[in-house]
Every structure is written in structure tokens, then in C-alpha cells.
Amino acid sequence: MTSASSTNIATLIAADRLETGAISEAEDRLRTVGGEPEGHHWLETGKAIDLSFGGDIAAVRQALQPLEGQFDICVQPSTNRRKMLLVSDMDSTIITVECIDELADYAGIKAEIAEITERAMQGELDFEGALRGRVALLKGLHRDTIRLCIEERVRLTPGADILLATMRGWGAHGLLVSGGFTDFVAAVVEMAGFDSMAANRLGISGDYLDGTVDGAIVDAQEKARQLHQARQQLGLASELVLAAGDGANDILMVEAAIDGGGIGASYRAKAALEAKANFAIRHNDLTALLFAQGAPREEWQTVD
Image (tube, rainbow, N blue to C red; front, side):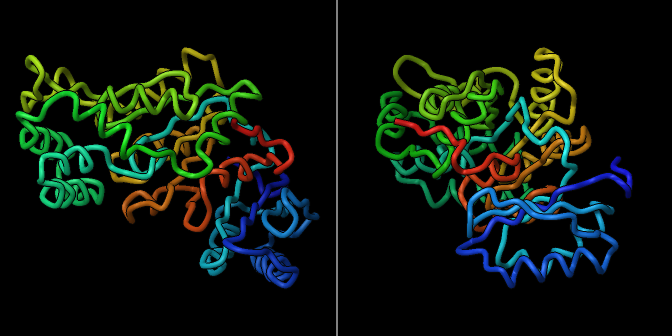
């Protein structure tokens, strides 16, 4: 999609500190695949840097792979870096926990539920079947437990609020798509600053969970559909999309962002998703997505 003669960007984001020697090594690696360095620009001194190069993105990405133990690395065209649509998963991405596992803890069955969740996120189980099976085990739990779980367990991943505030500051739209449940997702939309959401709805009879999920399931296919629908409704070019997640059920939406020329990111993800992403965040918090978009530290929006 990008010609060999155009200028591209490799962004290196250090796990700790980015030293001069590491920059020289990265530039040497660019040269080995014809990615001639064309200069660099600090996004945050000692932390994140853009390396401009002329050459093939795929070849450069592969050449820089040995450095991924030290850095999060995003390689992309230099144009349209600032995305106007962020589509993100919630559990273990925007927040630090898996809500269904935490809800199960109040029922005394966290270990049993968490094992199924892990296998589903690894792509070993059918997502819909695994979800319905776990929800069935929660039958009889009082609905007030949801509110209690949100208050006691749900916390934003570091950098999530800064990411949303900064992107919305330049006019971007944030869509939170989750295979989790509307009560949790609505709370996180408000906490993090998203504009819209899509999620599953727990079946409740009286004051108790009835062990079902109401309506169609928000699964991998629906997440990708939500991405396409939001982009079309906003009238955005496909390369202006950023999708982020951590599990196998995020693969289709991450691939949709990549196929459109945007960023499909994995955040401390399962191997199945990380293998598909064009930007894997392993060392840093979610503000790495701002560096990937060329936003220097001094332009980030602070959150009260």
C-alpha cells in the first residue's frame, strides 16, 4: 500500500530509557533492508522517538523485530497518523480486569470462570458458547453485585483516560466494544471518556441474574461490524481508524483496522491476537498509542 520511495515512520518507545546506542542500532537495521534513515524526531526525550525512513514497511518491521524485547515499535506511513476513530475492547485493555471473572468471585467461583475466560481469550473455545456457559453459572447472583463489583474492582488501565482525552481533543470519536456487559461498559465509558459503546446485556429476573444473555452476542464478528459502521457513520477514510484489544475475539476488528490502512494494536495480548497486530504494546501503558500517532508528550491532555 506504501511505495518504496515514500517516507515512513518507525516509532520506538522504550520500556525504560532509549539510549543513543539503541537508536544507532535501529538505524543500522533499517539500512540492512534498504530502509535508508532520513532523520529522527523525539516525541519524549529518552522515551519515544520517530525514525523517518524511505523503504518497505514490512521489511523494516521484520528488521526491527530483535529490538522488541526493549521497545514497543510501530512502523507505518508518515501520513494520516492521527486517527479519528478509536475502537477498543474493554476487559484487560481499557480496564485492568476481566469483569465476568470478578463478578464470579462474589459467587465464589472465580477460578472456574477465569479458566474458561482465559481459554476463550486464547481462541481455544467458541466465544459465544463460552460466554453463555459462564453466565449460566452466575444464575441467582443479586443484581446489586454488579454495582458493587464496579465500585470495588473496575479500574482503568494506566494511560486510558489520557489516551481518550487527547484523541478527543483533536476531534476523534471513541467507541468501546465489549463482549462483556452493558452495566460495566456504561460505567467505563464514563470513567474513560468514550463517546459510544456496544456490549452484551445480562438477563435479570426480578433482582437476580437469570443465567442468560439477552439478545444477540457481541462477538468478534460484531466488533468488526461495529468498527465499519462507526467509520461509515462518521464519514472517515479507512486509514483513520485505530483498533485495540487483547484477546482472540478482537482479531477481526484489529484486522479490519489494518486492512483499511490504520493501526491494529494489541495490548499485553494473547499470542493469537499479537500475531495479527501491526503494533504490539508489551512494555508500556496505553499512552504508547499516542506516541504511535506522533503525539509528543507535551501535547497530551491531562485528566483531573
